[in-house]
Length: 477
Image (cartoon, rainbow, N blue to C red):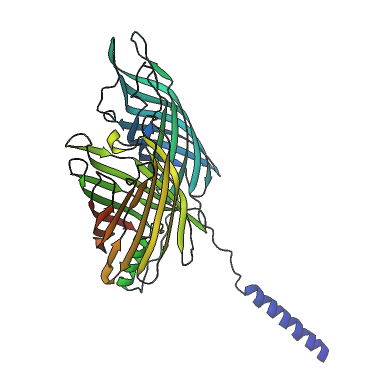
């Protein structure tokens, strides 16, 4: 009897234990982040540079080597996504601007573009927020041409069709917003003038464009992000200041940097360069980010020939820094930098496509942010009649952050033109300034003002500079 009771008790204990074990909580697998949805209509805007390296087949014409120009416009399209495959269609319309020839000498022929329209199908591969795509379709370019040589004086305009091929990469950095970088080639063939003798113009067009799109269908579902609590305001100000001073921080920002350079050129005029340079971090995976940094200069440039200034947009530079998401004490990033010949006037740019490496490294001990950014670019295309380019840039930066968002700063831009004559290669400024992090309403901003004196400089370049910057900051809430 006792053994029977003992058996019953043992079975009851086993059943009880098994039941409790079944009721114990089981650790659920981590929730997967929702994938980005690329499908639907979108509308956007773009800007960049375009160039031709064609020629006017005129005997003795040594002044036409193609055109370089700033382009800007709008695009609209529709995407259809199936898994990792994307199909779509997109239309673009861009205005093009190009000023007078680079030399104050009459040429035998000139050409300028007025507008560029394209329609193309897109096919791409999707990896969450990233889209790598190719385009194939058609384009239309409206051109003006002038011929002026012995026995021929002619002006004409034409809207010509051609084929379009392109590639690009796009990133969904917000639920309704994407950012893209694209290269397009428009094959237009030759344009023959109705003159005697007939003159042929070779004018195939290449374009590099940076664009942003607004998606009418959200790429991600609505989510609620946690708000920060329990942190002193001064600590938040300093954290934000250190992020804004880090060129490769995980922070969206839009700096507007004014550089006023005094006593430039043979007439000691003032040069003004306003750099609009949005910085957008793009996540590759849990371990790596790529930081996109665009620099679009709006320039008032003293003429080397006359006591006057030429105003317009200069060559646009694009930098990409690949940087670890969780760096150690040393924060670093490396990647490519390239410049497209987007100047609205030849005096405002090099007329060349530039390419090279760029790198940045910094440390943030205590209240300090200390580092350096370097790059070197070489000319790899563009107008064959413009001089080649081999240019170096180094920008050391030292910032000391204080209470209530104030900081001291120095960030001289040291440059070298390796192809210039000895003694005319380097520009080395020294100086510094003061700034502060604050809010305009609910918008965080960083602002500073500084002055620099060029202790080493080529002949005819400015001797000192006043720099002022206002940056709109968009930290994650």
